[in-house]
Length: 148
Image (cartoon, rainbow, N blue to C red):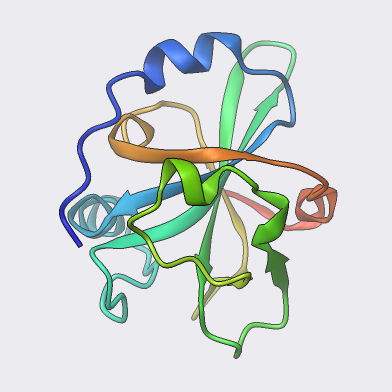
């Protein structure tokens, strides 16, 4: 698989987002490793056979600001929380080079278990590849939120 280009339109795209919209994204391995080192958490970079790691991005707000929730996915059936990627219909058109399985699983970190990362800035998100909107994934709202 060729390296992904930086998604130059992501910052413009975020201006039009609605609360609780969910998107499938791909995070390049070098960005994932950098993020792991900065935050002191393991997100699966060592076991990632591909050059990218799929994740779900949820747009949220509180009274003061927009923030982003990030949940990483895995193909490993060890996880008990399955995500139906058929609910992200644009993935094959927008990210055709990545071999998505119909079902992915929520990545569980060794210490924290299942969690959702709260991001206040778009530093990591400016270097992702956008793979389309996902529908009907409200069960993800119940995943514990961790601010790193």
